[in-house]
Amino acid sequence: MPRELIIFDVESGSATRADASVVIQSLTGSSEFFWLDIEDAGADDESFLNDSLHLNRIAVSDAIQSGEHTARYLDLGDHEFVLAHGINYKSDSDLVEIAELGVFIGSHFVVTTHKVELLTVSLLLSSVCEATENANTPHLLAYQILDAFLTHIRPTVDHMSDVADDLEEAAINNPHPAVLAGLLRLKRSALRINRAMQRQMDVLHTLATEFARKDSRVGDLFQGLLGRTTRTFEINNVLRERADSAMTIYQGSLALKQNETMKALAIIAAIFLPLSLLAGIYGMNFVNIPELELEWGYFAVVGVMVVFALTITWWVWLRPKISIWRLGSKGLYSLKVPVSQVTRKTRSGIGIIRDRKPKI
Image 1 (tube, rainbow, N blue to C red):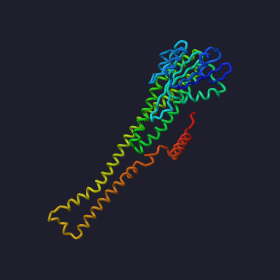
Image 2: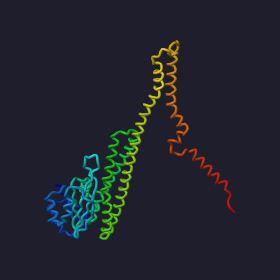
Image 3: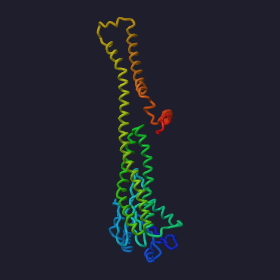
């Protein structure tokens, strides 16, 4: 159960790593506060948080126990508790995994708890002691932690947007079952992020309101974080809609592909049906068939069959080209306005302006 402890000196602005045994002593220092990070907390850590730091037992239980908990903010009198949701970058799953971060904020401490190793916390812990300017209040430090934790949701959403582009193109060009599986994973991941962030924005709004009363600077920072999180939430909602649209495109492309297969079979049947008809007629065992006595009868029938086959094949090949020629291929596929048309309209507009007579 890894523990990381960093003590901040407000007067000097320095931050140093320390042993967890000096936590209680650091509480007495008027110019110091500490950040204690606990990963995969156990019974000993729970007892330490309850008995030594006197944190709320219910909040500690929610922060430590496994399972999915609702994002929330609690004002517990002498300390505050924030439960936030982010991305678990250490997961090997094909779906996006949500990670929870519990943040306890007191007058002389910030305690973070999480069940899995969080990339955000690891980066902050490794860089905070090297920073030239560190947070000078626990609330400002809590903002830095939550800002990094929630901001790291955006790269995942951006990556999902890139995957959505590839899936949409594959749904059109190659409607394979693997594409459908990818679309389902994209939709489920977007739903997970949506469920995690929906309640979280309410929490950020509460934090911006509550912290603004204590420190207007921190309140403004949380208001900015709320705006960034809202934009990420909106992009994620667009991803959900794109996943639904891509699934519709996939079904349409699959139906079109099946139609092409049926069309090919129908063309083959259309070519050989007249030939089968002629072969069936002249394959009958009647004695009095007039053409049987003709010397050139065989060649005539074969010639008619060849003409039938070539005519139908030519018509099947030419008909789509005739349709495109009638519609106009450029008007059918291009969305770009021709330069000549723009120039013509511009010139006509200039001519109209020149022809206008000034009103007297």
